[in-house]
Image 1: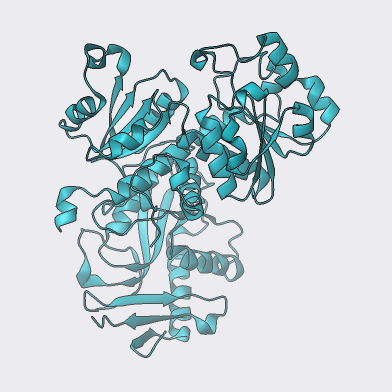
Image 2: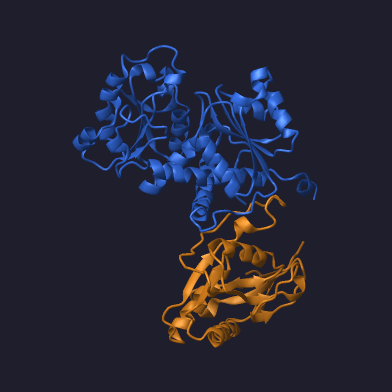
Length: 183
Length: 315
């Protein structure tokens, strides 16, 4: 993080939000028997890991089924820019057929990654329902009609600015900050 | 931003080590894709690919076609036997006619060395070489190296022996380039008549005794004797060849070591490799075939990524 950045969520606040999201998941899915949590590569997997750890340690949920999903090959901007999309590993050793899937990502911006994830998830089976959890919702930047079911915080930022989430094993180092577009 | 250093895949010789790493990493993801219940991704839904085979092929053609279809590309197939080539049309004319039908990418196999290179200089499409005469067969070498890396972890310092008809083999040349790029030591083994004189200039060792070559090897790639490319006799009889250079269970027992066995196919059972060896656990022939689809998906995906449609270029 450099000087041009501004902290949006402090480590303490981020920790409280993640705990609230875990509680909200628990409220809706209680025993987690028919639920699969899927973190979207590359950044959504950190929130997923934090949530799974919390559900196990704080709420006594013994087994939370989870996976990592990469949506690179399902993106709609392939061959539209000079940026080449390179894929991250998928870890989907789970059955999703007939289960409720919760897609988890860090920042919801245009909604295009989520659209790609909705298509990608179909390759593994037909879930009974799909929900969306995001840590940060950049609400006025959407290109598609996609809204989160679970939401950490809403942030309004200029189109060119970047909202970054910094994850770390040490909770006091995790935070959300705004990276100003200086161009 | 990582991308390939080339715009066509004409041969391994033009590639760099980073290209191989990028292709392998991408292929790893595609291998996961082709093991899903639905084995298809929509990446190339706006791309049309022509498979132009001027020479017979079963495995490579099927593998390319499957790879293309798994990427959602539209595929047209062309085989020289039933085409206007027989009526005297030139290669460039044939390809340009096909490109006029709005084809973006051409996969070509041709009996003449350099055919893919020749085309890439004359037509405006991305070209993938699926074997040009006795020159190169890059995707085969990529899938061989990928399969070996899966088994051995790294190829750095490993010794790989290529056995058989090196003279007529495009697989051998591409394999030598690919394995050397990955840091492996390559040795060639076969009857002197089937080892080209320039072999030693490629930085490989040459051994004419099979057992001596295999003693120090971590893996062996058994090539087929290509009778169809032989205008004269290169060894006294097939039986003698099989006795000297065929891989048998007895020879493996004498070696008594972990040796990974590859074969690019088609196998002539009982000649370069016996049925027992081909079907043994040491042979990774079917892994090679599975990896072939993933590697070809990766190559097509990465090349297509650089070959932007006109509206994107102007944007």
